[in-house]
Image (cartoon, rainbow, N blue to C red):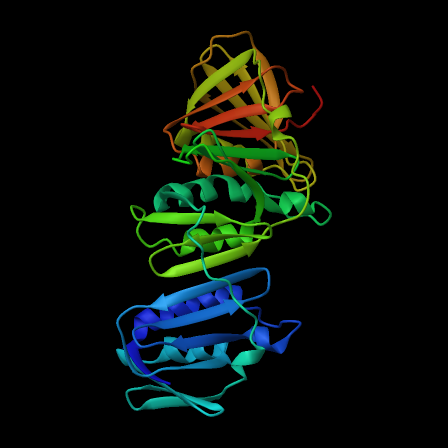
Length: 365
């Protein structure tokens, strides 16, 4: 194999593959990437057996075709630190030489037959949607997925396609994010739990938000195809919580506030709350929201802001970190909060077709 390509193009492809390849895998072969040079393309492949990636490098000159398996992180580090604009890779026998200007390194290669098979995207039965819309759905939901051990089905994002709409839902049992987007599904439906690592990588390889991407499901994995990448993620096997039961159907209290003002006041008050008492009280009165928090070891803080609210005086308390996470993703300048009573879930409307549910915290009156 002998190929020449732009250093930055190669570095970008290597960086994506490196996010998939484990630093220390149960199988040493997984710490490597696979180079495949055909007559008109150079493709990089990597996998940790849960998430896999194929990335095509643009603007390459292929002098000799071939296949080679080389260490991923070492290759990325060397290419990243080169000062030349072009890089040449020459792989022969059990050696692969990487050259950039007067600099070079020689890496030991492994047997390509030992490298795990990485799937190829199949367009049959795939769904098409705009890349920017897909990335937005991932960003609006994945942050709410569980991180705790023992909640395996919640470690991913539920992706549902039905009635010409794609929904993404994530929850950790204390908060839930749901976002949706119209899609031409042709009457087809699909539902699967996708690991957050896979979805994050999906979003990363979308270069142009206006480009269409293709999404495909099979029994064990989900795949995405962009003009230069194919990413696959093994589906999470388990039963996702019945999220519709958490969505409030009736609410007695509704408030509308400026997103940035609410976020700023929330930060002020949250500063004094301790790790063992992470709660901020939302006290509503006509046209006004009062925020307050306290900690035995730090003190107390209070802040006010004008809001749209005309109901009876009431209050509710939330973990400020959860509320702040949602406000960071808010697509609108105005955020709405609705709830039935102080012990009911709070429903934050953060944009069109985007809701965020936060469970309240019980504090002393």
